[in-house]
Length: 247
Ligand code: ADP
Ligand code: IPE
Image 1 (tube, rainbow, N blue to C red):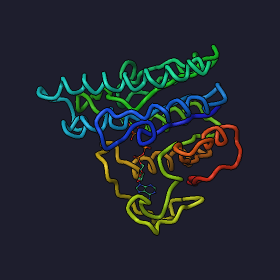
Image 2: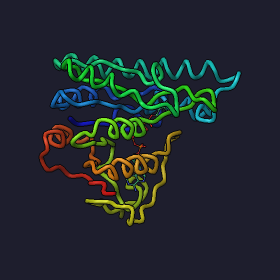
Image 3: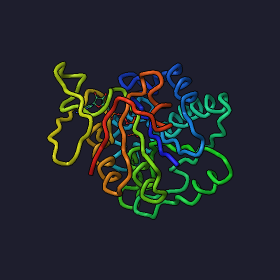
């Protein structure tokens, strides 16, 4: 079994509110194989934009309640597009929205994912708003979900699909001389700085989740979803340009 997290940077334009990249979703839905895998997707500009403006990661307040609803609606819309293309490719995907069954601090209810996989479905989940016992509500990234699922289900490999070729020594979108790293471990000194609003910590947050997964002894790979064929090759276990994350 594989766990694949497709970042919001790939399926949306993170700089524009609710800007979907439909052709890329279409292609990635085609490349997604084999079926006994879990798909997690990010929120991109369907989540981060409003979450950032209204400080949704700081918790529920009287004045931002409606904004959680709007984010939830927007994420559901993005998710529906992804499910639509998976179905068009004959892939039996079913969404299990995190906000409907999880509260921060509770044990992750991974059993339902197993139940669907056993029946031949592809469970899909996304970075989402979530019930929080301290803050009322907060945000859980798809990267954190990947960690929780990996810990419980011990997949063969976790693949993080993003909009650059892998992890560089510094942000390749800011520095022309950034160097792609074939492997990264906790010893490497990496610089992270983002350009778009991202309430879940951007690449730095992703690195924390990926290292935690690597510490479980699970293979972790970062690849570029904007390049045709890389997701399919990574999923079937062929060599693909990218970064392997070591503990
Ligand atoms: P996603 O939406 O795919 O989950 P993020 O937007 O959170 O991913 O992170 C991807 C972005 O991280 C890239 O577009 C890149 O500009 C930025 N980034 C910052 N520092 C680095 C780095 N050292 N290596 C690779 N990418 C980096
Ligand atoms: C963020 O999820 C969820 C919300 C902002 C509601 P992710 O952190 O997984 O999204 P991306 O991949 O960075 O877009």
